[in-house]
Image 1 (cartoon, rainbow, N blue to C red):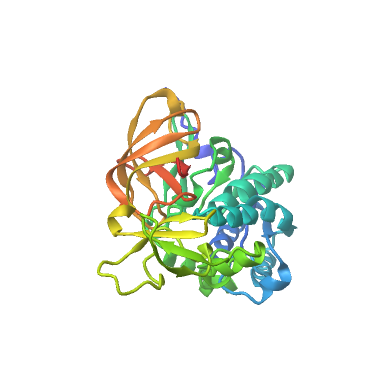
Image 2 (image 1 turned 90 degrees about the vertical axis):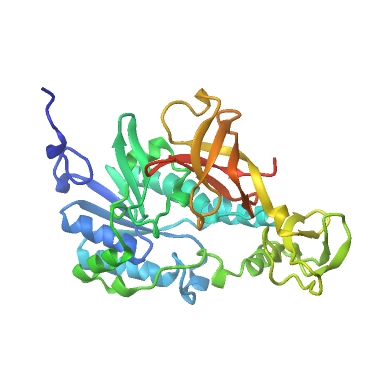
Length: 380
């Protein structure tokens, strides 16, 4: 009879005591990662807290509601002091600018709708920071993300969080199988954010009532255009608003102020039917508008596919799965057709509106909670 070794594993899945298990906790200064660090420290793990300084510290100090500002570094350090584990601040400004901010600006100017939080997880937190954790001889790295890691027949699997309202699977689809072996997500099983705050209060953390960050960390007040103008002077050059036939309907003050699917703020009233942004012609500085029906998309071309399912990605001609094309939308049924090891086409069984290049299309099981990977939407 096979022996059950599970009872010999600690809560992070290692066959040794917590005191002998080193875990690097990525600490943003918010309540989620603070609770993870405090929880693991209380359980007796050898915890090392690491906070990344991702952009200008001086400018960050005055900004609230974002994840990596000066106040957040202070909050993370204070949690480490209260719980008695070492804490380091790493200057990742250059890496962050090269890997995330520059691409954000360029893809936005190219008419895409980028999701920089995914690139940050992919290129900074789960790449450079994860390597730093290995350099510190850590057994694993833990984060405050709301997602679950479960062991399957072929290794670690990614699953949605128990609390669908907090689930962050859309932002973590590009996590590789190798990274997943090293990562831990201690909050993914919690039923609600209220439980996290209760834990923070239990550990006596000052951040227990700290508000959640809402903005992209380097975009104050959600004002994308102002950030792009600063990064790419001249990006707000005016141009024409045209219909699908090229007829000029009005003027705009910069393509960067518009996104696919936008209806408000077009400044072309007096028309019988509402018009939506259906395309952005960046080279000719044109915003293309049309009826809502033009937004409906059935076929979605993908590149940079990351596959987390079983077997090779292009082992079969097609798979029936569910997909999300926006983080805020529920999964919809679709057919996934691999074109190569990293490219694919998704056919949505029910057309979706506002599918935009630069966003992610994330794959899920049609039944169950498993995340199967995803890819980046492009113009095809």
